[in-house]
Image (cartoon, rainbow, N blue to C red; front, side):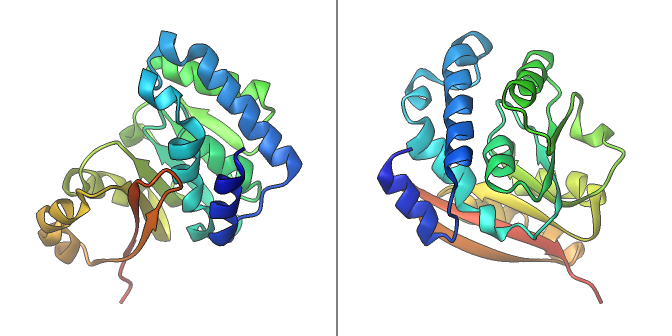
Length: 209
């Protein structure tokens, strides 16, 4: 991993061991190997896996509570779920992916990288029977549509961690009525990634009375 990314993550409170860095490299190699065939990443994104995707995935790692049960909703190729599970071995991660070929890739990654804190749910998030302390959402849809679906998959005091970009303001305006109706509060963290892209991490939680 590039030194500027290590520094960026260290400034976010995340120090990775040699073993964790090696796991991330193995995951990167696996993505390179199959991403074209499975359409996991665009050609452009394959050239910036670390600068964009790993940095973005891991920038929010310290926002997750210790030993939390986490579900990565619509995991695709495993971003952010796999980098988070590598960087945070204390959490239990469920990768939720309904597309058969991508779910198959996630199972392969779990096996080849020996990620014992991961399980794969090969189905729609709506069909999950378990509840989770936190659900991550990255590049999956708008807040107004996702929040009502995801909310009942959270344990008591559960949270939703949304990875967003510059379009967040519009989404928040569209979701304002739902946030108020469901009594959801949120905190936000704004970050500039090492390659210059602005990202925003929204941590949503249902207000308890």
